[in-house]
Image 1 (cartoon, rainbow, N blue to C red):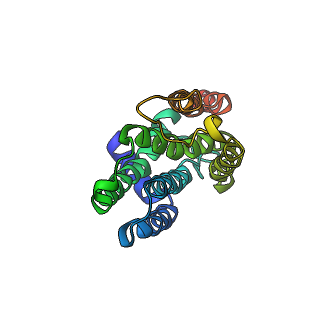
Image 2: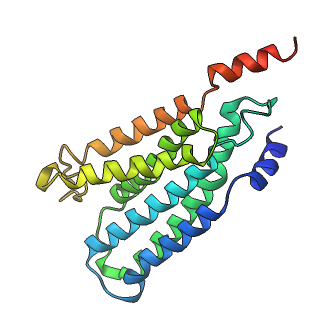
Length: 213
């Protein structure tokens, strides 16, 4: 059942946000690939790439036919397949960009790679989780728009945090500040949100149960 579902969703999900995000992600890396920016700018560009790719992946989550068509497959399976269809290529694109940037930076690539990957995961999965919540209540594009909206609000709030309270600073000598320790906590909360948001909605469970009668 998963293979026919995957083939159907490949045709059903919108791919233009992903294409646009790939272009933006590549453009964000051009200063690194063509010039010699400081390591801090390189990391910022990688975060931007993860953020736009994740925001685009969220557009696969609203099910336009959910309110009119009853599927024999549970909602959680459909939603996770939708996420995988765009999130897997998004991760591959980001990984390729990261490798390209590291090769272009050469000896300047001294940032903590594990920490940057953790930040990229949070930046990319946050809009996906928010879009999953939105798709639970709205079966159209407006549900997916909640992802970039939440992403923007969190970014603006985080920019007011400065010095050691800023989560954007990179660890020095392997020592993490309290703000930096919030990244794995944020990732765990995002994954829990995805698990909860992709469950079957009560109303649709009830409608599927009544259909045989």
